[in-house]
Length: 563
Image (cartoon, rainbow, N blue to C red; front, side):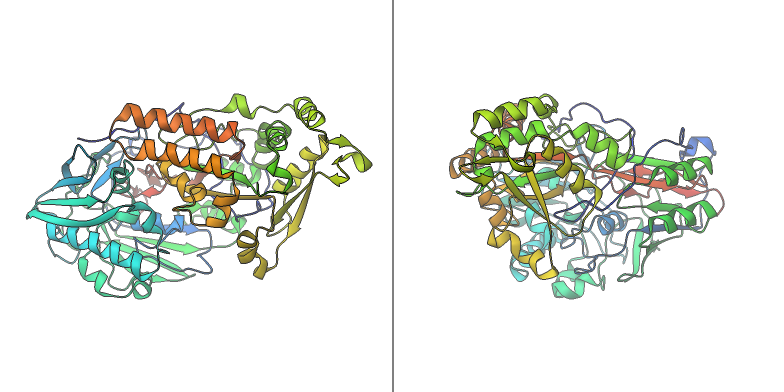
């Protein structure tokens, strides 16, 4: 049986941001305005045309981990590229969160949640002509497990195969994947780019070589022609026929485009200018378009497409270690009321930007709106701090037992976001100290505990992603996870994760994630700051643009009318 995913309130069509440095927001102008975007749908331009090259400009390549291997990479832009040359066992509907067939035409989950049996589509081949059958899937599963070991768990895909122990070939088109413990997020994991199925021969190469793209072969509409780190990535139409897309696309055959060229451009204004001039077809920023750029794009007849990224919102997490100011639960309660999330969104990103409503972005399955608990109430914050013995003193800041209520917030650079939070907290008497980090300190401040607030996020269309931030057993930073709450609160959150992940009962999963989201706010563990939204400037000559459930670009239906 398939497990269905449920969404909360639908997000509006709006401008936004994707991802930032771990401890500070890049200085940005507001975004929005500009009137109605032009249509990028095929219906406005008639029947799709074949041929041509699509040119896409991305944010600069990852400076420290250049990689195009599906299982290892976490860089959002490269996961977009991977989505178009490597298919997955399942797909996820971006509108409903439902898991639908793709390479697997059906599946069954055992009653104990430990065995996933996938029935594969017949006739599927990798772009090099090799069959994609049950043995290929089993070899991929073993390759994932081996890669986790070879990278000491550093491969990003490790978080997607929690509990996976191996695979068994039942017959040429049937494969069973086995888990050591139930993991209700595993089915959704099989829809992601990180668990895309590639030619098993790839796994004979070491992980570092696979990162270069050498020998990485998928079964998608396109072929990875080459990846030149920090310069460009090129996809070309696969040379053999393609006829096995998921039900979520209209084009059931070969790609319309002949080639897709992705380059890496640092300046947002340059990307926008190139789009308007016709030098590129899609401008894909990491940070939001400015008001000026949005207006320029739309008045030039092009479109700005927008969709919130699923997963953990851009969030503050506290250091609650004994002796730190945020170990006091009353200070954490005051913090919620002291930060004006609506003003933050409007000031940093523009008046049309969505206000974060909870622990997760609004497109995340099982999202629950917690806006009432996050409402701005500076007078309420002052009353909480008064009652907790924090009195106003020199400079308008609060003191208790001779110590100032001073919060250390390490940042990579001074920017509008942290400075706005600093100003808001000052209103209620909290001194937020913005401390620029040296390159060396950026890798040491978390393990050493030299902070009171830090910020991070996680992109995945499943709320189980949050455990890789706050569950010390699996967190990417155990130091952050163990300091984000008291031992008792950590145990409670672990129990809620277990309730959600170790069952296949939809009602139990829904309740556990709802309870978790409430608990994280009630206990002062998660402090959401803004919702992350992917935007793209799309030429009026481009049609069939679509976002995946992960808010990546899906090229199946894309074509150009000036090819």
